[in-house]
Length: 244
Image 1 (cartoon, helix red, strand yellow):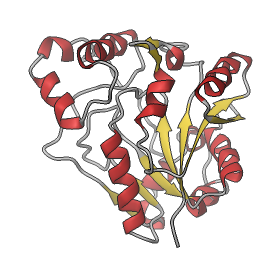
Image 2 (image 1 turned 30 degrees about the vertical axis):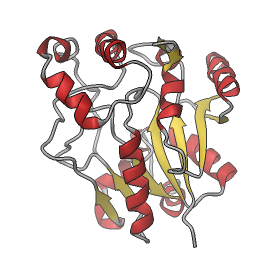
Image 3 (image 1 turned 90 degrees about the vertical axis):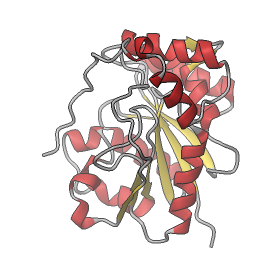
């Protein structure tokens, strides 16, 4: 039986460090549109944007309508409930979690993760950022089975509901987990969008490469040759994730 994987893109306007970032324009396209376009044809069976019920996110819904992408609205901080609502709508076997602050996602990584999931029946969770992580921050994806995601509703509390999957990988003994690594390791690079400094780096990448997606090794090679670009956001600290 074919495994049905749906992509769920987490998106909202209320970022604390860079409000409205998901609808900022990069090279003529919104950040959200770039994330949508990064999903390669045939890799996933459905795609939905999970946004919030806040009035500010009416703009996210309007962008989804413009792009012809399905959407679901749920709580602001209880993102797990938001995902479960999307899951109930989709009726899929597994969810690939994507975030709308990653406009440089590599379609090949998305396809590889989906292919690995389909090739290994019985998994609860797959991540491209096992510890130690190897990908630049901003290129990661993760997949969680519908069964595991639903089970979290009765176990996850506090910050685990905000981070959706954190309960799984911090209680790994309870789940069947696999990690994908991408040697040699470029976790020191940052291509996620959370601050003005991140915006400057990502804009430099888009200005150079144009409209299409940039493969992982091409992007890493270009950045390694341009330390002045890497320095644009090298001082940005990633928000800490509580692991209790």
